[in-house]
Length: 293
Length: 248
Image (cartoon, rainbow over all chains, first blue to last red; front, side, top):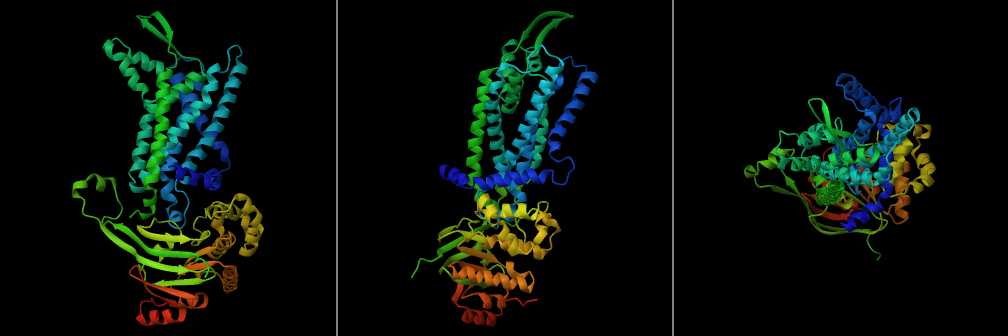
């Protein structure tokens, strides 16, 4: 694996050229160009906010911020995986003509999407500052926001590892990309994006569920690495949501769910493992891409 | 004698043959119904050398293993067994616009192609003017290549390939297009490349082109080197054999 990494390093210039090319191609023929990578999530979140606030009556102050904090990382995850799934197949004619480390293609797709994600996160911070300016008093972010780079790095590892698996598998079995898009769609609802992890806690700790299972169920929910990372994004940046236990209209108690650092560490370890395994698998099969029947 | 530019010893390349065409998840899940795989020897125990400054033509029927041999030298395929020694860098001359993205401009594509052939971005910048001048594209370099004619694509691709300072050039039927003037320019450039000690291996069905350019010819038949010798000797035997499809 070390020699593969050296070879990749030798071709770093090609990797960068490839990323630049990806960025150029995407919005080449559109008028608004690069702005789409910001406009797209903003419009989506605007619609979601209207629906949840005014139709479903969700009473959460600054709900859009919570949506964006989880939606933007999930968008990166989704777009990077869908892009990289096709990355080898679309370049197969070139692969059949010339040598270069094949992993450059999926890695390039992930990095190109990652740069869009960083840009979107920058805009998100501007939005938080804007909200703070309109409504001063509380801090725009929590102090733990300084952990964010680590979280972003872990999510990058997870996404890259899965991208390497998916791009290699999709080259041999074209069903994979359909499986991935269905899987990502379901994952969107299984992750705390539209709702809050606190609501999951409340649901798993309802009186209908036997007491000895309650914590286990909640732990199982948090074992989903991307879901747990999204929980991390929200809790590191924004104020926690109160959990209120009510009975027949009276508030019995209100408490807060702190960020579970152990579960976050597990998600981080899984992310790094997935990256190493994905890279090893990709290298094992990459010579067979061009021999695809 | 100096060290050979290309040295190939007992090279073998086998491919899996599956009759169902595309492999599918279904095919691999139904493992109990899997038939025994058949193997195809596309390149079968091939050995030869190419000296620096030499231009070697490869002829043979379709499916004789010529393109696979070129692919092996370009490191696209991993050999099943045998050895390949290459001294210096290899530049495969890409087919018409392979690796060109239609929506990007000529210059953007030159960068991508140059870097993929082993240059740094800085080196491409230094050579950009020469590359554009040689290609005779002129102001079109700033237009997306989807607006290019096939001749322009070929000229730009060829121009990048000959400016990367490779010591081994691999050519697969790429010189067939382009006007007479540009073909002459290419041949002159190739002669210059040879004079500087560059080695060329080129696959072609165009016997006239082989006669003009090659110092030596390899005749491949069913994955093996059937004959290896001076151009005229091998070509006349090859033409008598009737294996060469008539030119259009």
